[in-house]
Image 1: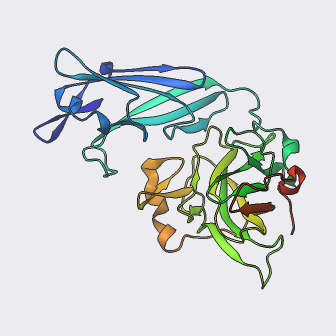
Image 2: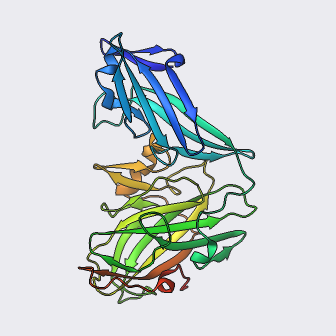
Image 3: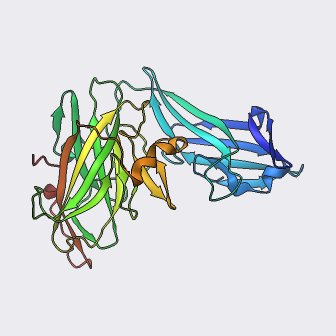
Length: 318
């Protein structure tokens, strides 16, 4: 059931007004609404996405169409033994700028799961390290999610950092970046300059950067904006990686980003309260896996952008 507004209250109407078509990589959701909701089409949401198309109907109502890829709109990916499931919520937000919604309707697409879903980059792209039965890797991507061809970036441009875990025969797990700091040294020491990027068990504290929506629980993409820190010199990104049960999100295992002055949970915005500790202190865990990515070079101009590909693969300096 989904809601309709009458005199400030919510009236429920039939799920027959909602049609969901699941395709291989995308979904089309059609939502027929009455006159009251049709007056506020921008407040109709699939996850965090507004309608890709909206039209009024002859009865004074409207039809909202959401046509998006399953990697967009904060779809949450779940795995069962046989199925790959994408879940989201269709909702109406009473006032723009408020997170609270008056009503939610679950949207779900399920596909037969292949025996093994590999990370979409060849493992040879990053240096790999065994951690029990898990294999971790890190590397740099370009804006089209292919391997980056240079480790030199212009101030203000975006650096795409990729982290992944190859789970082999392990149960499905979610990968998190627990902590990341930028430094001017490959090994952190007393004289190292340090710039925090992710802290407090997965809180992205650099507000000019963001996590990109996941399309698989086994990897995480960080869009990092090139900053003035150690400009012109070598920069290394030191990250602690952890994996956990995707059904057991908590304040120790999370990916939070600050959006418009409030913290949001990447993998399930309906559990944003797990990010409440980002401004204070979150519970800590002892076990994690550390990777170092670098060197990166940030320049104020594009005069020198020929980098050495082999120089910026993920490495272990422990």
